[in-house]
Image (cartoon, rainbow, N blue to C red):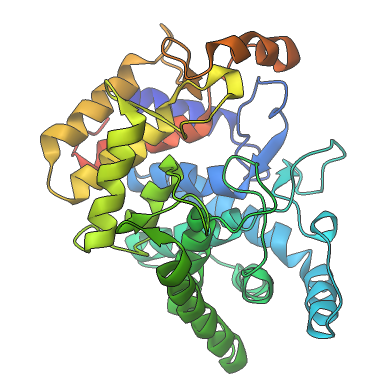
Length: 360
């Protein structure tokens, strides 16, 4: 069985009957939960390889989860419009149980990027297969209302850190999601106007405060680099690959964070000692593939495949080269060994394999 076939099998086997994708079916801290961010890229991977029903089910589940919270979002938006402060603890969670309810475990929950990533993936899936996913309109409109009201607020980043900052990868995710929602054609006039205003506002803010030395930064007001910035180029197109800022961002991420085919999250990473992440190799390869650098993209795909267990499962990260090796054991003691399989890793492998014409 090829790794493409195995990845499709892993994702299909562990997808819940509700449509949710568990982040990792066995890892202690992730088990039983689905992230919109992870799921968006997992769904994109299987959609590209013909599992239309699986992607449909995830998008329908996501829309249902959001639609069920329309009243909650309306109340939050109304409070914000009155000038009331809405605390991070009152916002929608970043992950949901597979049944679509809020979890009761403490987590770093105010993250906006997943809502934008889901809208982007829904649009990509619908466009690819030439028809809308039924019944998603209420969820789309709820996500748009939430994002247009709160996109300017600091929140946790992709890695569930630094709630006090405004993260460029998060802004890029929201920018792409709102553009996708506009293209879906389900928004009312005022909703579309608010979404377009937010898209313009995000682009202006990032240009003014999120670009240093000609490339994107980890958050506004720093010069640090983070591998999540790759998504702002491909696939989200905040700055496309042929734009100088996009090209410089990819180049700087690769210069600082790539090593021998793998990619670190950021230089100060200490999570499980700060290893190289499989899914980030997928993002860097994706950028190279779209830029026509096929040999370089293939090198990242090959590295991803080489990290699979003997049974073909892809982990979240690998621990052979660590940025902070002295911090590795504390995470193993806390949560166990690295999440394996991580469905997002498999989803990213499927995406990059498709970009390079590698099929089952």
